[in-house]
Structure formats: C-alpha cells, structure tokens
Amino acid sequence: MPQATKRNFLIFWLSGWALFFLIGFVQPSELAGTSVIDMEQHRRAGTAMAVNSIHDQWRAEGVYSSAMLSLVIDLLFITAIAIGGILGGRLLQQHGAAAVRAIGLLAVIAHIVFALVDYTETLSQLVQMVQGQGSDMLAGIAAFARPIKMQVFLIGFAALILGHSASRILSRRG
Image (cartoon, one colour):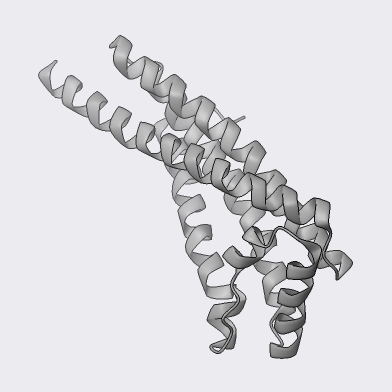
C-alpha cells in the first residue's frame, strides 16, 4: 500500500474516477447504440439463462469484446478507487479531531469492504464472459453482491467527502 499522502490519495482516487468514466464509453449499450442490455442488467441477471440471453444479444450486436474490456477496466477502477479511498481515510485518521479520525476509519473500512465485494461481483461476471456462458452460481453471486457494493461505496464516498470537508473547516478554525 502506498504511503498515505495527499498526493497519493489524489492520484489513486482521481485515477479511479477517470477509469469509471472510461468504463461508460466502452460498455455495450454505449457502443451498440441499439442495445437495451447494459452491464447493470448483466450484474442483476441472477441466472445463467438471463446471462446467456444478454451474451447472445451482445454477440449479435458485435459488442461482446467491449463488454469484457469494460469488466477488465472495472477491475482497475476498483483497485484505484479502493486504494485512493483507503489512503484518504488514513489521512483523516491522522487528524487531531476524534470525529474526523472516526470518519477516516469508516472510510477505510468501507473501501476495503467495497473492494472485496466489487471484486467478487466483477470477477463473477468476467468468468462468465470468458467461459462464454452463464452460471447460476456466478450470476447469483454477482446479483447478491451488487446492492452491498453500492451501499458500502456510497458510505465510503460520503465519509471521504464529509471527513475532508470537516478537516478543512477545523483546520481553518485552527
């Protein structure tokens, strides 16, 4: 893990956001223009049959490879945003105010849980894509992980924003 400096935090966190926006450009629904099936529906599919239907449509529209690429970029996003979030939380834990330190701990924990759950979800999807067919077990794991991932991501994001805002306000009061 890189050292918790403001520079490292910003490099990883902002790189994560850049990758997030890149994912939006390579997802099937963006490339095909006609696809009504996007990566979110793939995450929520829940069954091999639903996943296979999505894969069939992506193949027919010629965007299957792009869908796999978006999942690979998603793995890079998870890594960058989680490291950035952990570093940002660790910076908050160095603050003099106990409340800011507690928010920093929350940010660290949320980003660790986010990374574990989102890796599980994304790898479950990617394995199905590489195998070229859905799996009830992997589709179920991805569908189960998605809402957990979203909640801890929002908690971690909010903790970073709140913590760094509080830190700046308290530092100005000095």
